[in-house]
Length: 288
Image (spheres, rainbow, N blue to C red):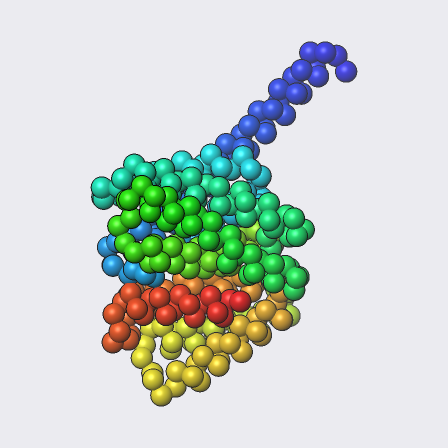
């Protein structure tokens, strides 16, 4: 092969790699920024504190697990942009601390998961135990940095425990639900349900949606435990019969429709923030 031809081939490969890297960066930035703005809208507009569904934690961890440490840049830019576009007077120290914490968190988290030979999926039982166990540790990194820093600089607006626990619980939910959903479908993008099981899958997801509707969209106090039992049974049915990718899809449907029901239908007499926080803890418990 001539030198010119080798140089042309190398240049073409570099262009392809650069294109793919930029595409990944843009996807991570958009995914993180969009989910962050949605979480901020729910938190500040609907006043749902201490309930915070922080899906960006799961997006960021999945991005680093799949594409490596270079994903720190779009994560950092997306988080900073999400704060700068808030209609709030955020102290510079809070901006820097929050951005640093949420940038370093997925980097440390990915290193911890790789140390246990986990790829961020829940294909095996040990993977489920690892992602669930480490989610509680990884999700604490950013709120610890942010809360301790705000205490030091005297820029803490809410109580220390509220500031920490709100972000921590939201991050746990984001990592447990979003990270395995993204990584699982990234590694195996094909729909895994064979033709002979499709009728069973329709029945399982029908019961799942029925349970979610009864628990999160309407008020049926006399049957609440019946539908909780039905939801748990359906969840185990999907997990054992259809595999991890379908299971992560079911958990994503549960999280999205459950939280949406709390906001839109608001079936309970309890305040929205109390209701959402209870639903957040329930989803975390069921997912684990």
